[in-house]
Length: 397
Image (cartoon, one colour):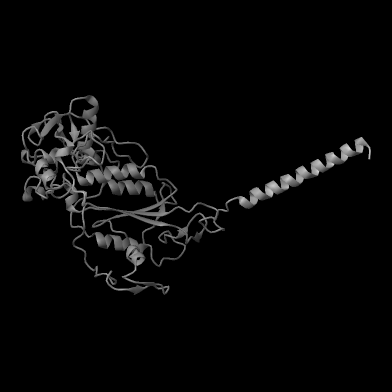
């Protein structure tokens, strides 16, 4: 074989080897690749927007300007048992001297953010906390309500500035208005060291020594911090006008939380007393338009008009949501599984329920005892048995 032919043979062999190598390499990569299975049905050509129900507590206690119902850690009254129960508009803007210092302290010691340090823990969870930025509520169009004025702060900025059925609100000069016996805006802070608030290692709670120290009211234990800078004044005024009570804080927070949601979620809502969820109510993508019955504007109009009166039938409210998602069918907007865009039911649609409440429950009629208790073994509909002695069963149940 000539030298030239030998070189040509070697060249062809090299080329064939390269092609085979690439084929083998490509095959190896393909075989090693991860196969991802779609969470939705293969026929689906659109993203399936989940259903979201918001249940907002409209009980009378939502008018309170203190949280929890009694002082944390020792369970005593904030002011007195009778005063703490008052729910009228005057009571929810009055901070009596007898409530000092605890009623006017959002957290024990502002500025400390380490959750392992008890001084970062909450005191009156509704009162002004300088660690927080209090933003005005958002409206359906994404625009914010105006910042409140420190020298003429609305008693209820939500009612004053809501786009539909606005109601004029009285105002207060927060530079001179009284807060727990102090003239002008401010807050109390605990000044002693973290070592004065020891935590029980077994419960994670303040022990008896810590509770005694926290509520001793010794001179210098708690100091009043007045609001002085312009930034603080704006923040305090927004808190007073938009977050001062449980219901105002809930409404303002929900307006901000729902603002980013658009057509990627379907929304429906209810209160636990008024505006109860009904089976014939449609659920739509969270955008305004004829096809969605202007659901976004409707949601914000409802949110900003949420009352605060009555009891707390939380279980009944949760049951209504479960009933709404059960046994539905048909090409109608009140079928939570029917989709207008593809004109079919989508069984892969997920359902979510946010129940925003300040308490447990009462005044729940028609709610019976649970049919299954943890002390009785049970078999599920698919035949799988769950034993009360099995560790996994205990966790699941």
